[in-house]
Figure: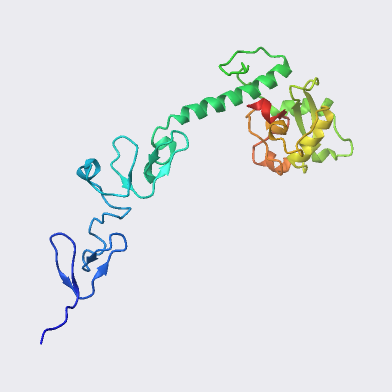
Length: 264
């Protein structure tokens, strides 16, 4: 009497072991013995090591996509499409800095133009000399000067304006620069340390007689507040005291109110 067929032979080349408890690979659907169930260079595994022959073989059937970085032989099912250059890269090279993306230079140039634009606005209000840049709008600017905030604070306390009801110990001082559309010169003002940036923006807009369209939904006409010395945009919901404590702002520092469309 013949015994029924029990178990299956390992599909790994060179093995062919009969295993009574075979393992079926979920990627390639082939059956393997215990020793090769995880180590059989699976043709459909994301972690498969690809040879040069497989990479350049036009007859090779694979659903994987090769990394676009020159010299990288990785082929994966999961790839990342770079928004900057439009090419596909493996997980190790998905970031722009890892594949020398051509868009990095464009992003850096754009950031520099925005930074120079804010510098230009601040310095134009101060009447400082201007230097032409490569921006399409011919944005102007000069290098920033170092500021002694203790001395600036002493000066501001002598002539700064603000709400007299704010307790002296709760006052935060800034030199405020108004938008291009405003005819007002920059001036020292004080505000309550617990005010959020959003309230500060509204108050400065009233002082500068600037139309505040932040609630209209027109993004390019919205106002924003910036640290005029670092060009960092100030988060609307953050209290001034927390920005001072974190070093994002300086007491007696400079801030700029400007429309989003004018900072680009």
